[in-house]
Amino acid sequence: MKKLSIVTVLVVACGIAAGAYLAANSGHESSRVDASEGGHSQAAAEGAAERIAVETVKPTQGSIERTTTQPASVQAFMRSQLFSKVSGYMKMTRDIGEEVEKDDVVALVDMPELEKEVQHDKAAVVQANAQVKQMEAHIQTAEADYEAAEALIGEREADLEHAIATLEYRTKVFERIKDLVQQKGLEQRLADEAEDNWAAAKAGRSAARAAVVSAKAQANAAKARIARARADLEDAKAKVEVSEATLQKDQVFLDYATIRAPFKAVITVRNFQVGDFINARDQGASLPMLAVDEVDLMRVVVQVPDKDVPFADVDDPVTVVIDSLPGKKFPGKIARVANSEDPDTRTMRVEIDLPNDRGLLRDGMYGYATILLDQGSKSKDTLTVPSASLHIGGDGEGGGKPAGKGGKGGHAKHESKYYLWVVREGKAEKVHVDVGAENGIVTEILSGLRPNDEVVVYAKQALVNGTLVSASSAQ
View 1 (cartoon, rainbow, N blue to C red):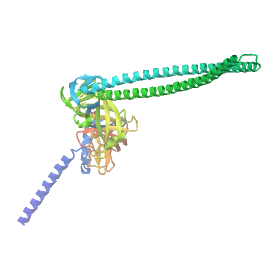
View 2 (tube, rainbow, N blue to C red):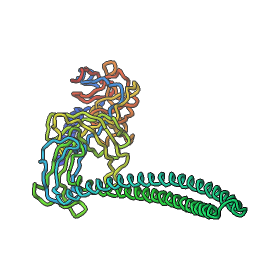
View 3 (cartoon, rainbow, N blue to C red):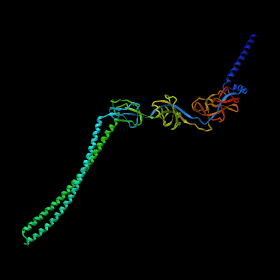
View 4 (cartoon, rainbow, N blue to C red):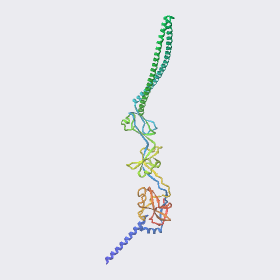
């Protein structure tokens, strides 16, 4: 009996201790913002006696801005590696760091044999042009000879007409004298003289005809000489073209020995010195003589990840910061986009053009670019609140935890319920909301929240529906 009484006392003592432990633990749990259902009545009773201090903010109208910050590399806007197309010894070169204008001579390759070849070509052109003039003079001579031959033909034809008329006259005289001699009216001597004159006139006619034929032959020969002189002239002109083409070709190769800047730039690489032998590019040269960069305008290259690619457009605002230039920001805009993703990295190349008037940006610098992909709407239907004020509850009653940065960026999925504590008529009220995008700082509230609601961002004690609160604006 005595032992039973001792056991009973021990059981009662253990029960009292357990009850004290549970009461103490229940008081500890009530200090959370989201109390358990068992602590609701206690927190409400305490809140009735004293208002709980909370800090609140007003929701902001409009959606949040969508930005992306990615590594950025600075490159010269244009870069050109300068090779020689001809081989020879370096005669002159500019040095690294020198600023050059477009078409400035930056290097010379010595090629004396090609210079002599060009001189020879120039002399050949002069000689060919002289032959052209000579052939033109031959044509003029041949044409003059032809004109003289044509005039001689006319003269010889006139002589032939005179010879024919003389023959006709001598024939008549001879016939008349011959009749008179037969009639014994004249001496035979006169008939013989008349016959001699007739024979001479006949021979003169034949000679005149031959002279006409000869004059025509001379005219034909002069005409042929004209055609030959004209052919010689065409040949001489062709030789001029050949000699000029040869000169131009050799001059081109000689010009290759003069290396010029393709644009206004700064020399950034020099691989050879005066006196070094330079191989032509097509003869195995692997190193450029010089490299020049355009640095008045710099090209900033950014690889935009797949999730932001649909929002990256030309003229989107960008802010670039460079690791080696702390405290400096370089504003700009997207100048061009690749419109295609790299299949290996699933990123898209975008480029920003930055003026470099002060020369602070150098090729190869590294930093970060923040691109404003979407400025967000100013619609009154969409509100934004601090992400720290948003809570997630499995069933919406107790056990809640801040949503904040939990989960991925972009649009939150409705896998669990989101809610906020708001102050309405001096009391705390839990409101369930639909959320949109979030950037880790603020979250879009698509529905469930009023524009004039005061959203609780901090409470000194746990809150339940209906708790009396004393609200102050969060700093």
